[in-house]
Image 1 (cartoon, rainbow, N blue to C red):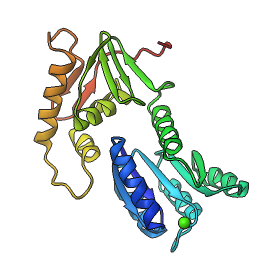
Image 2 (cartoon, protein in one colour; image 1 turned 90 degrees about the horizontal axis):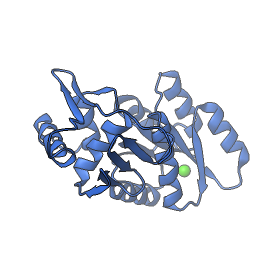
Image 3 (cartoon, protein in one colour; image 1 turned 30 degrees about the vertical axis):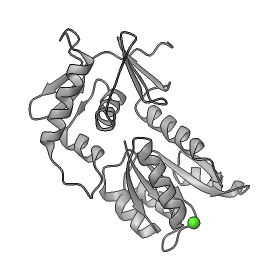
Length: 229
Ligand code: CA
């Protein structure tokens, strides 16, 4: 999942970046509202974290402009503690949730993951499709109850495909979520990773969990199980 962090305090911005990368996210950074507007408009984001107190363009105005431009990804705002007006105004401007500063990173992470699940139509942190169970909190995969080890990149791709199970996901979309802008992009890497995921998920080739749609991308083909585990 690709996340934009718009935060003017350098230490906090860098701390968020490190923790988010450790948690499996691809991270874009912006240090003020104008940078945030550029990144938020141009990059293929899944979610954004926006501090409300920003130089150049205030966070509330940034959120309004992104929403006015048709950007629908979830936005989590960072507010000053005990400032209920900030929270209300943030939600009215188009944010989806908020965390008050100072915060524990775990709270930010839990709220981001909940926003991403809801955006993908999932209610629970455990994404189950037939025999495949992906736990987005623990970042673990089980197939038929047996744990399967994944690398960071394999996990990122599988999580993205399963969050959008049943939909076509283009190779470009996967590449953009795998790397931030500093990496050289190569769609052959996606093919290799999807091939490895298929062998790990389906060594007997009986499930066929990931379909290839020629020229269009991939689709996670196992039906979502939306009943509680
Ligand atoms: Ca600030």
